[in-house]
Length: 172
Image (cartoon, rainbow, N blue to C red; front, side, top):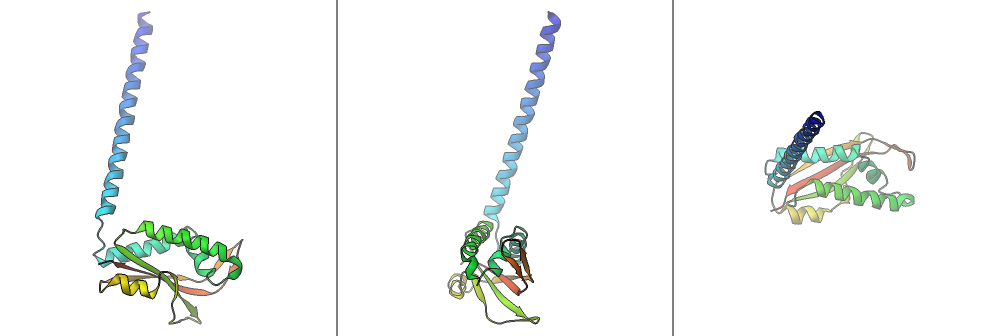
């Protein structure tokens, strides 16, 4: 009988230790999440190098996630207009959620023909007017990304080449 009581006490003690460890782990995770959230809120892009890294990371991640190329290559494809607009909306939401509220952005592209970049921009998100109004004399950066082809089981193969620009600036 005494031995059974000792086993029960040992199990209760082990359960209390496990509960304590779980509680401490959860508090630690919560603290890390709060620190990360505070860093994002306090993150100032006044240093253009930080803004440049953010823009490059956004373009790279968007391409790796399969968001960027469907928007770029389906831009003028009437057959896939609904897919284009759905992908454009997701891409816009992704870029917007990756930046703080005080950062303006425009996503644009230029065609590359025979290794020569055309001078005319095609605006995918935003416009030249957005840049002029929102920048208001502040400093902006441009991150470039080259997309040389797009192969998709749904949309087919595209061999066009584009230079994609993500233009970011701090709103004044």
